[in-house]
Image 1 (cartoon, helix red, strand yellow):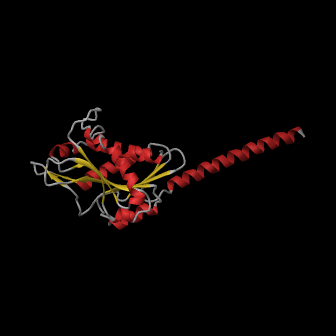
Image 2 (cartoon, helix red, strand yellow):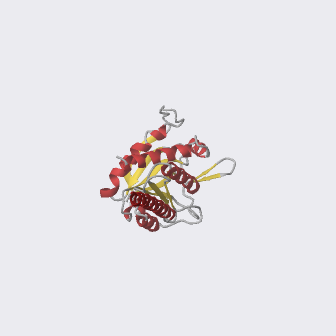
Length: 243
């Protein structure tokens, strides 16, 4: 009888270990099957899905700043970089899946296609990442836009509060620099927001065409302007999803 009890206990332990191994393998497979263009956090179950939309792409450059040297700074390239930096911040947290509507400069999805992609990955929020442009190289302000008031307005207001006045802290030292003003929240009837199912916003953090801002946006280090924008966008998203 005693030996049978010992065998039974050992069998239970073996069965439990098998179940744990099966669960681990299943979890690993689930992570490996993230939708195309998506990246998952390495820890915790996926509970928060974010769609990031780097504006423009391919034959649509967006805003352009031309330096005296003849070199050009293109919005499509800068916002793609900011989107990847935002992704990196979020997937280093617990439970995130981050999906990008475009992953390189080979495509320029239509607004409808961008919305359809966000819907297809069941995103909880949708952030359109843009930089503003003007013929006046002195203009520089922060603004966010909503498409459908019922689903987007509160999220747009939330993201604006995350971005401003943070964007006016040009040196990122906790002190306002009075170089970036705030232009509030407005409506923009883009199909990407109108046809998406989740709360969304279009962010215009700063003006790429501002002469001083363009110089800042050239900095690709982890202490540069691009990283500052990504930090603030990620912080706003994380705050909204964990509010």
